[in-house]
Amino acid sequence: MTPARVGLLYPYPEPVSPQAWSGTPSGLAGGLAGNGVELVPIGAKLPPGIRQGVAALSRAGGRRGPLANRGPLASRARTLEVTRRLRQAGRLDALIAMDTEAYRLDRVLAGAPALPVATYDDGTFALFARHPDSDISRDGIPAAELDRWIERQAAGCRAATVCCVSTGWAGRSVVSDYAVPADRVRVVGMGHRARGGAGVRSFELPRFLFVGVEWGRKNGEAVLRAFTALRRTHPTATLDLVGEHPPVDVAGVTDHGLLRRDDPAAQALLDGLFARATAFVLPSRFDPSPIAYLEAASAGLPVIATTEGGAGELLGDGAITVHPDDDSAILAAMLRLCDPAVAAALGTEAARRAAESTWLNVAARILAALGV
Image: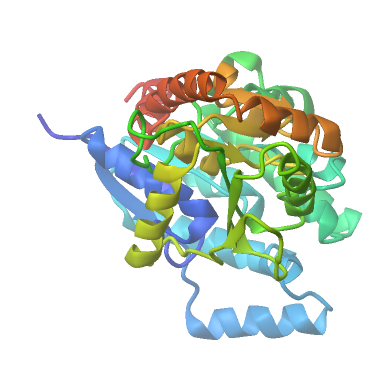
């Protein structure tokens, strides 16, 4: 039997790079291949002349960074290039499209009306615009620019056969903000790279792990405050920090810096940290669907999660959710997980939930939603 040919559209030069979107396109590509489909990556590597022209005109119009990357000129050029590459791909049985705020998926699909198409998102830009601690709010994106991004994403969702999302939080916004019928929205979860360690650690000595590139949005200072207070009653507790942040000189804290996804040695070190930790703490100021929660859970760690975004849905009773502004709640959650029996029980439940949230699982749910 001939395997289904499924296109994976991520509108940048390397559509399945492990560095893109926290490894999401790469993980989904692996999950699709693991489900037996013939994967057809579709990106948008603009020809040098066009890329340079778009960049120059964007700068002349005062757009740089994300404003240039998602500006009208870049969106138009990307839409044309994705359309061309989709035609070059030949016969496809289905298409999965991501980052639809960066191009006009509805126009891309105008030439392929019979093709089953799924979008895949961890949230909507309408949601991000409403939260003061989302990336786009903190970056100060002008309202007029943001409206264009929202319009593109909404048009893409309405043009798709089905809109797949990682959480119900995101799905509800697709329905209410983008006017997509609820029967065309599917919650398919978020995937992850499984980490080792489940069932082999001792929970007797509290060892917390924080992994977050964006120190401010991931609420690192609040974690340090809670940990400092915790050490007054648990002086042997430790905290491992991974990510980019200011220098930290706090008793019991070890700083490991940024551990890149494409560095095998760095990832081996991170695997060891997951295996030795007894709890994962990341009460982000805002997080739509953090893969780090699932990675920690796959290693058998209970998770201290945020209430802000869809993150709290990922692990159910395997996580303790706290508001990022509530220092006392963060401390209480960390104190609770200093109890070996509590930490072990929640870690077992977290591992069970993570086992149902591999990229293989997510890809299978998207393919089922597409009828492939």
